[in-house]
Length: 111
Image (tube, rainbow, N blue to C red; front, side, top):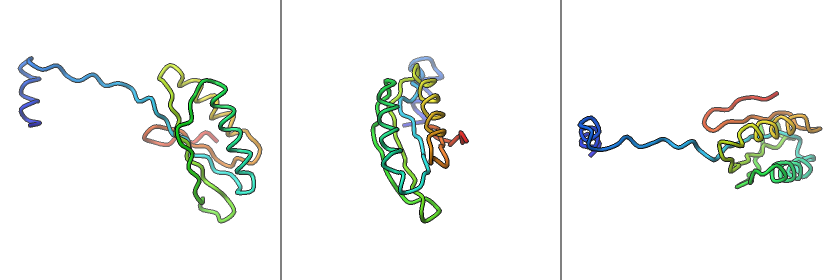
């Protein structure tokens, strides 16, 4: 079927599907376990206050035993990417946050 679709596209009978930018981004935040509640509160207040919608927030153990890793999935339209980066930078400066990584498919370290 893929070969047939390729043939149709090359013959000009079928259009190439337009790639739509993803509206979902992912942040990974590492912080001490005892500060996790404050960091989660900061994530929700900061992101939702700037028009970004937090879809999921998953907490897991980090490599160190006293640290927690939080994976945040954010619905972010392409026009709000700069707002997302600003929020991620502000989160990386929050007291106790050890690391923030951002990216759709690859992670970009912010600190």
